[in-house]
Image 1 (cartoon, helix red, strand yellow):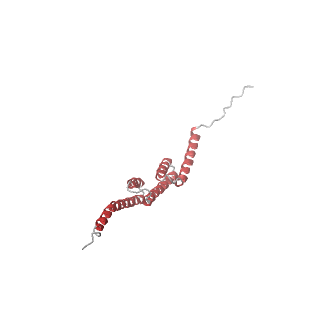
Image 2: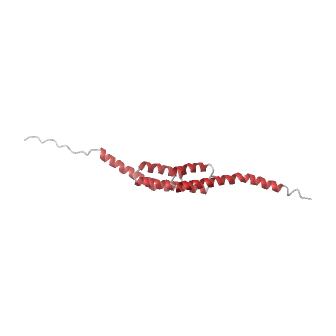
Length: 148
């Protein structure tokens, strides 16, 4: 005679498997999305990587180290882009890249500090140059000397 105690175990195992299966599938989808982000970054396609990161955000659980690493890698790439743009004199692109990096890593202000300071210095220098060009030099006018 078989014991009735052993019969619920297969059902319980099947139930646990069914409960864990969606989590495993979501984890596989996230891993695939993170690989796509990495490929886009390797190809220098930052906008595509950003779009994929936003799509992956829905799959990632809060505090997922893999997702946070992808965010950090994208932020680093944006900071490098901003630095290159700044060296080329393109303040707008540098500022845009800085803003995007900052939005990815709001808890890491030190990440963007150097670029932010460089952008501000470039803006001040351009402002000083534009003021020097648009403000005419004031030359004192000498009044004619009275006839003797």
